[in-house]
Each structure stands twice: as structure tokens, then as C-alpha cells.
Length: 313
Image (cartoon, rainbow, N blue to C red; front, top):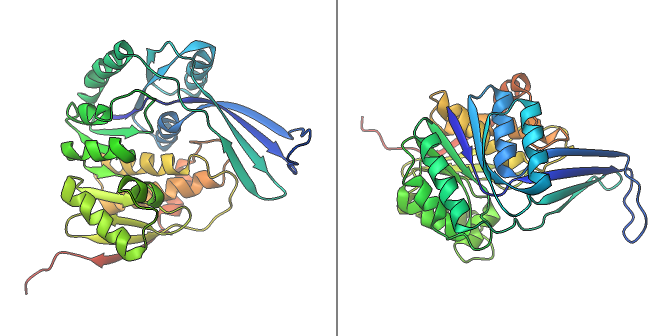
């Protein structure tokens, strides 16, 4: 089983406009609502890929009830921790004329100590049965920076950590199997404004030295870099139509977990993650992928090995 766990789900509104005029009344051509946030986007992707997957997250209020209902409608297996703060509402605005996507994201409401304790207890139970765990997303204000680190200490299977900043640095102490920041997140995690190509490789190697067996760094639509202590790869994503990029990174994490669960080597699992992300890019709803289409796209991901272990003879 693959466990996907995180603290910041969302009830997502998607508004599609022919042309958005700032400062004026705009009437949407399409309106959609769905359960979202990184944890549920990844769980939905894994569900469509064939899982087996279980989601674990915190929901609250009327919006939390809507999240639960939508997950049940989709057939996503989930364990819910009831929170006192209502689940946040995020809004995606798609402007067809400009081919732009704008995301309006409130910060998740705080969760109390008792809620964190309930989540940790539930996590320990679910992680014990999981071959692969995805810990994903930001943490609410007031959550200790070492929260993911504590969860990783309770993780017997392979852990994919999709986090940034102090949560990522703390998590490295528990030697996660794979981490997946994007290029900007990695730079900010290390206190830098940006990373050129050489600095990026150095930063990835630093993450390996600090404890991550594998480091995967995305860069929007650009190449994905993958490193271990003795290997370095550059993978180029397949081309395709762009409908809504929101959730692509979550699908990449999900596809990696799916590949690892099937026994793939890390760089091969990343190829599958990129295929899932590429398929999602052409779809409206976050986490929506087609398994057959993703499989077809996996073969068109370009893989270059930039360094490998030296072999005598």
C-alpha cells in the first residue's frame, strides 16, 4: 500500500474565463469544485494510476465535509482526522485569452496539539502497513518544524518527502529515501535567491550528504534533475498541451511513489512521475490522470546519465 499524508488539504474552486478583466465584473464560462491540496491531488493521481493508495489528512467544518464527500465519490480510500479549523478554500483562475493560470491560496488554519497527536497516532498505524509513504505539502502555522521528522521516524517503508524550508531540513535527519523540492524551493531552503546549474548540482549533492538517498529537483517545464551520492541524471519532460499546471508537481510525486511501489529503481520511477505530471498538464482538474496515457508518455521522457559509479575493468 502507498500512504499519502499531509496537513493542508483544500476545497478547490476552478473558474474558467474566456478573458479576465482585472477590476471589472467577470462571468466564468466554467466552474468546478473538487477536493484538492497537495495531499489529495497526489492521492487522486495514485488512485487513477491503480494504487493501492490511502490518504491521511486533517479536515474541518463544512468545507471539510465537502472534501470528504468528494473523495468518497471518487472512490479514494482515506482516513480523516477531524480538525477545529474549517478546511481552506483555494481558487484557480484560468484565463483562456492570456493562457494564464492564477492561484489564490489562503494559508491553512492552525491545528492544535491534540489534533497533531491524533494525526501522528493515525500515521503510525497506517505507515506500518505501507511499502511507500508520501509526506507532502506545507504545514499550518504553529506546527513544529520537526513534525515531518517525527513522522519519518515512524516510517518503516520508503519515504518520499515533498517539503521545503525547515521541514525539509529537519526531515533529512531521518534519511528519507527521496526528497522532491522544486528549484526555487531548494534555493530558499538553503537561504539563496537562486541557483545556477552548477550551484543546483552542488545543492543536490549537499542534500544527499545530509541524508537523502535520492534528490529530485523540478523546474517548471524544464528538465528534472535527479541525484544520489554517486549518480546524476537529467530528465526532459515530454511535450504536450497545457490546460492547468496546478497539481502537476503533486502528480510527479505520486508517480514516483507508484514506480517505487512496483519495484522500479529511483530514476525509472521519476520517469513515470514525469509522465503522470505531463498527462495532468493537459487536464483541468488537479490530480486527474489517465493511467494508459501516462504509460505512453513515460516512453517519451528523455533520460541522460551525467555521472555514474566508476567500474573497474
